[in-house]
Structures are given as structure tokens and as C-alpha cells.
Length: 269
Image (cartoon, rainbow, N blue to C red; front, side, top):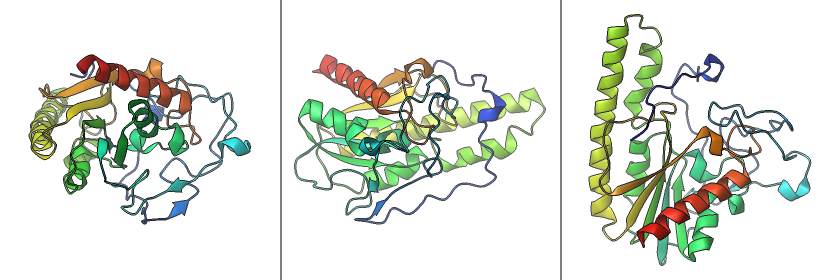
């Protein structure tokens, strides 16, 4: 379970977009220089902090904009995802949000690439979703028999979490605020439970892990304790460096988290 469901967050990190964001298209077999809301170019500020609540303690060490060795683009495979698209003998399925997508860094420095190399297994990466339910709609379309399924947290558990942004901040009655929070938490827990059951049905031979923060982040919170999905939690203090967008974690953090997942996998074997 997440230790702190509603931590204090500096208002400067509030996500103030008025409407649900539309994903930038990922066209199959296309390569683009920048991608997403944050990695839009010229964001790297050497010596400055991260621009996200969770990465704020990290300091930018790399000159992403001027070091040719760090230059990279996003290449989408034939399914429109990042990473290999050969579904033959897939040993690991990665399914998550921007962290597993590897936003802000070359794919060869990302958790999916690093972990699959460490385990000597082929992998398929279905990542770049805002909610668990959006991801599930796509994940279960693929008929695979992986040894491991690696998940991460998302912006929210489902699309109705967007209501929190319009409702809760304007509500002054603390009793109503508490009721809204608890209602969403319970609803999210039920959805997460259904997802776990669907995961067992679709990938019955796999071990399941979810890499998630140890406190509520954005609208990722629920009151369900998974019985089959092992939670691997990370903290703000474990965000070591920054990617090109000054927002997402950098190569050292991805290496660190890949090793953290590997350690848990080895414990279970």
C-alpha cells in the first residue's frame, strides 16, 4: 500500500491543465526528435533542479542539448510503441506510463532495455498511458506468454480521476473533500482488483511486479492490497538524475531502478 495517500505538495507543481490532455500521435515505424508534454526541446538546465514534484531534488548534470553522444530520438515500432516489436519468445512485458516509455532519455538507457539485458530475455514494451484502464485496453490485445510482467504507476487509475482536478480544489467543506477522496480511493481499489484478475487470466504463467512511488503521486492511489502483484516502491530521494526534459529521471535513475526490480525478481526465484 502507498504510505502517504495525500502528501503536501508545493502549489508550483500543481498540474493546472484545464482539460484532459490528448496524446501526441505515435505513428508506426516513425522516428521523431521530441515527444510528449515535457520533452519539447531546450528544456535542459545544467545545475538546476527537476521541474516535477518527484524529481525536484535531482540536479541536472548532463548537457543533453549540446553533447552529441547524448543525442537521441524516439522511434516507434510497427505497433506504435518504443522498443522491439518481435513477439517471438517474449520473456518480459513492460506496461506503464512515461517512466517505462523512457521519456527524456535514449531507449538503450531505459529500464525496459536494461532489465531485459540483465535477464537475457526478449521484451515487449507497451508504455505511454495516463491511466491503468487505458493501458489495460491495449495490453490484453496481445497474446503473449511472458515470464514477467513489469508495471508502473500512472497519472491515475482510470479516467474519472480527472474529476478530482475540477472538484476537489474548489471544495471548501473538509467533510466533502474527505468523502470525495475516500470514494475515489475505494473505486480505484475495485478497478485495480479487477485488473489483477484480468492479468492472471491473460498471463497465467507470469510473475507480476509494479514499480510505484511510496506516496500518492498525481491521482495514483487505491485501497486494495494486491495478492499477486508485487509492489516495488521508490521515493523522491531515489531520483538521482534528470533526463533531457528536466522533468523525468535520467540514466542513473533508470539503472538504479532496473537493479531494484532485478533484486526483487531474484528474491522470488
